[in-house]
Image (cartoon, rainbow, N blue to C red; front, side, top):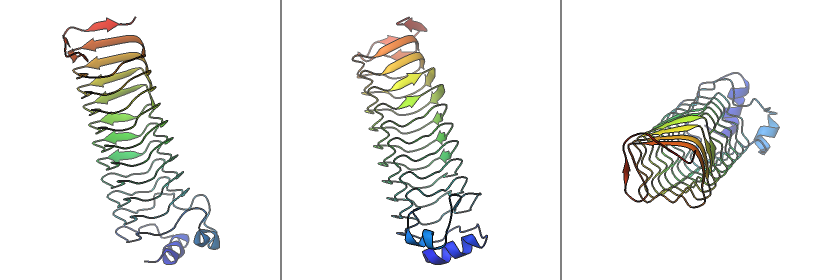
Length: 249
């Protein structure tokens, strides 16, 4: 299907484009084709079914995909800079290496989504559900994860500098070698997380709870910590805390 045919059918009211191959397509808000058909701000919203669609390498800069169903979609290396992805369903989708800088993911569903190596700097993921999400080596500097659900997320080697999160419950996530320097982390409960060799240098950690977490080799230089509780935790020096213990009160 060509981009022109897609837009003609969409503007005519069709919403189910599952399994369509649109790799390399340009559907950015500023593209000549979008302007030609006068597709407005609500272009791809309204629960458009794009499940399994192939948008590998597509240019979707500033596109409005709010509420779209993109389960199992191929968005490898796609340009989604500034895209609106609020309430979108991206379960099982592949966004490896995608550029989603300034993307909006409020209340998005990201179950088993592969975002390894993706650029998510300044992205907004408020209330998003990240369950089994792969963010290995992803760049999330300045991103906002306020009130997001984080369960079994792979953050290994991710750039989390100045990322803000809270309040939130974080379960069984892997933060090994992640860089969370200068993060703003408040009222968060971390359960069963791998935090080996994570860097929290100059981060702000307020009203925290760590339960059954491994902090071996973690860098905590210059952190601001208040009202933190550690229980069954391995500390940076390898020592263990079994009984719930409060620090930096």
